[in-house]
Length: 361
Ligand SMILES: NC(=O)c1ccc[n+]([C@@H]2O[C@H](COP(=O)([O-])OP(=O)(O)OC[C@H]3O[C@@H](n4cnc5c(N)ncnc54)[C@H](OP(=O)(O)O)[C@@H]3O)[C@@H](O)[C@H]2O)c1
Image 1 (cartoon, rainbow, N blue to C red):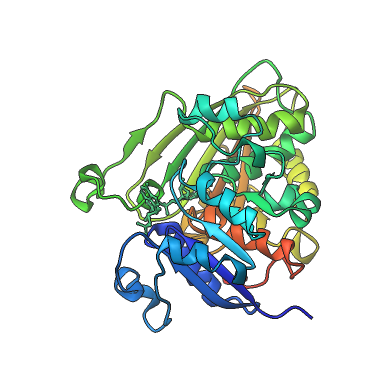
Image 2: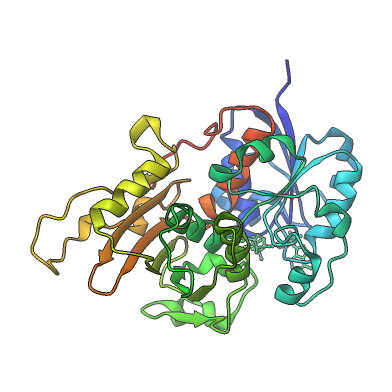
């Protein structure tokens, strides 16, 4: 019988590393957590929400030297950094889950086009599996290198895949996605635009020339559809620390109603205990007259923050033939550390929900 896991967390002072450690501390199959950082700071001073954990930061070199003790390592570093570390850890036989973008594109040229730098570990790309757990279980269970999806990307993929799989999206028009992320989505490097005084009561649009998660979503959805898919991705930071509120406008290939689209989504994700544990579709019926503000039929961000759930809801503009999909996730959980643990659970043969069943705050 396998003992409890020893896992490393690389990039230990960042937002996603903090969330990794928080969730791993509650995981019944994880016995030892070794976070590593370039900073020489006491762990609990950097992450005071984890006071009492007893964790200590190693240096990256110390963690690399202890690779022989590791069952898995989570790379929580900016794009470009992870591919260096991943190559060393893979050589030492450690299973790698990269929360960043370095292994998300099959083709290193796509990586260079989107991230503006050369891929320095292209030999690992064939081994990397894109970690949308719900749609890639068999391959995730078999691999030793996971490319965890981007936080916007996984939210968009969960929102759009059922429609695309069913062939209901007009092939000749772009899918339009608007997504608002909390400020933790910007990482922990201080920026004056992200100070409370600037963000509070405001919004910050960014990367409207084409957010980097757009091509990642296009790669995944293109595989689902068997043809190129165009995603017009629009992003902003909202006046909150964590969470993603995403709305997608999807041009339909034919007539549809809200009820028949809801049937499609519950067919894809199941309902109740028979369905996907972490993807919940809001099926509350419309009872009011047209344009009544029936807020409860759409998902709300506050109901997923702190959890690994994705809540989905939808409507249909029947006059214009447009499906409106709403998806909410916590960018640090389902969008990062929670999905990473879901994938780790599959890789090590644990129940997929192990350590992740907590509901929203
Ligand atoms: N924030 C999110 O919502 C989110 C969601 C999904 C995926 N991601 C991805 O996860 C990765 C980490 O994101 P994050 O939000 O945790 O970022 P972050 O808060 O900025 O932390 C990244 C950490 O990486 C380490 N690092 C190593 N080399 C670095 C370098 N050359 N420059 C700067 N930092 C370096 C630093 O830790 P030390 O100084 O301790 O070594 C830093 O604290 C990124 O690739 C990001 O795209 C983020």
